[in-house]
Amino acid sequence: MSKAIQIRGLRYRYPDGTQALNGIDFHLDAGESVALFGANGSGKTTFVMHLNGLLRGEGSIEVCSMPLSDETLEQIRSKVGVVFQDSDEQLFMPTVLEDVAFGPLNLGLSPDDALTRARTVLKRVGMAHALERAPYHLSAGEKKRVAIAGVLAMDPEILVLDEPTTFLDPPTRRDLLTLLRSLPQAKVVVTHDANLARALTTRAVFFDQGRIAGEGDVIELIQRFHWEYS
Amino acid sequence: MHHLVIDRWSRGSSSLHQRDPRAKLAALLVFLIVLSTTRPAAQWAFAAYAIMLIIAVHSARLPILGLAGRAALVLPFSATFALLTWWSGDTLRALALAEKSFLSGMAALLLVATTPLTGWTAALESWRAPRMLILVIQFVYRYLFVIAEQAQRMRWAAVCRGSHKTGGFRLATGLVGVLFARSWQRADGIYHAMLARGFRGRFVPAAPAPFRAADALFFSACLAGCLAVRILL
Image (cartoon, rainbow over all chains, first blue to last red; front, side, top):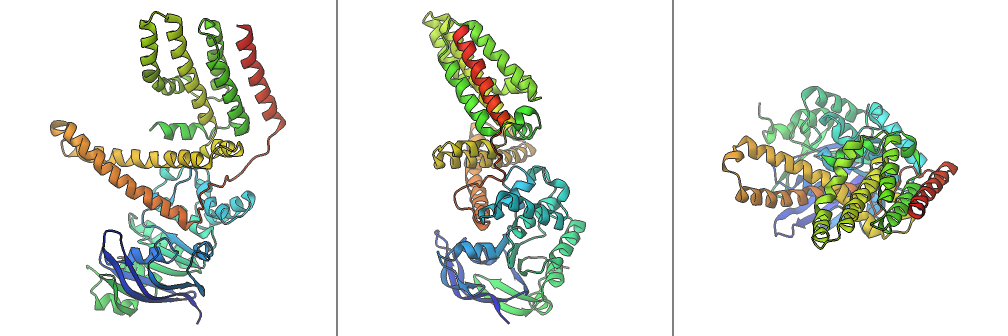
C-alpha cells in the first residue's frame, strides 16, 4: 500500500533546550486513520506540527512520496490539512465565508472559484447558514466545523486533527464524529478521547517523552496503556 | 469592544457601503487634504464639513452618536495642543485644531465603518502602499481582538478572586506581563494556522469588485463638494 506519510528518525529540540522529539519513526498509509495517544507534553502536538513543515527538525519526512524541503513546502501544506486544537486560532478572517476561502485563495484559485469551493465545503460540514457570520460569534461546535471546512477547502489528502473534541459537549462530539467518519482523507488524530479513537481510527501510536512507546491496534493499545479513566 | 462594533457596521448594505473602497479611500484623502488646509477663521467651512459627514453617516444608516463618540477618542490628544494654543492667545486656531482632529477622526472612522477591513486594505494595496504597512495593519486588527479577549478573561478571573479589594498597580503590572506572554503565544498559534493554510505574506482579497460608474460619480461628488466648501466659505 502507498504511504501517505513516511517519517524516519525525527528529532526536535525547542530553542529553550527541551528535547520534544527523540527519534520518531512513523508511517501513515493512504486512506488510513491513526490515533496519537500520550500524556500532556509527550510530543504529540510537536510531532504533528512537523507534518506540514510548521516545525522543522532533524530526520526525513516524506508526504505523498515528496520529501519535505523548502521547495516542496507549499505543495505539502496543500496536501496536509491541520485542524488545530483551539479553533479560535484557526479562524481569523472577518466572516465565515472569507475564512474558509482564505486557503483556496492562497492556493491561487480565482476569487470566484475560491468562494464557490468555500460555499461547497461549508454546506458539507453543515454550516451553509452561517456564511456571513463573524467566526468569533459561533458556538464551539460551529467553530470546529468551520475550522474543518477551512482545511477541507484546500482539498487535502491527509487530515491532521489535534484534539478535535476538546471544548465540545457530547451531542456536538457525536455530530463531529459523524462528519469526520464521512471524510475520505487519511487521518492523524491527536486525542485523549479513547471513544473517539475507537470510533474513528484502526491503529494507534503511543507517545512518551518524545519517543514512540508502542503502536498497534487501537483497542489493544488503549488497554495496554490503560488509556481510559472509567 | 469598539472594533467588533465597527466590524459589524462595515458589513452594512447602504449605498455608501456598496461603493468601491478605492473611491471611498480617495474621497477620504481629498476630505483630509481640504480639511487640513482650511483656514481657522473659516468656521462656516468646518460646519459645512460636519454637515457633509452627517449626511454621509445618515446615508450609511449608522448611528451618528456612536460614531461621534468613537471619533471623540482623538480629542484628548488634540485637546492638549489646542489648550496650549488657546493659552498662547489664539482662540480661533485652538478651536480649529480640535475641529480638524475630530472631523478627521470621524471621516476615517466613516471609511472603516462602511468598508470591511479586507476591502480598504486591498484599496491601499492597489495604490501601491508599502506591503509591510498593510500587513501590520491587518495583523494589528486581528491580534487586537485576540488581546482584548484575553485581557477580558484575565480581568474576569481577577475579579472573581476579589481583585477589587487587593488590586492596584502591582496586580495591573502582573496582568499586563502575563497578557503580553499569552498574547504572544496566541498570536504565534494564529500565525501557524495561517501558514498551514498556505499564507505567503499577503492577504488575497476574496472578491475585488470592478470600479463602476457609480463609484466614479461618488468620488466626483465628494471632490466637488469638498472643493466648493474650501473655496467658497
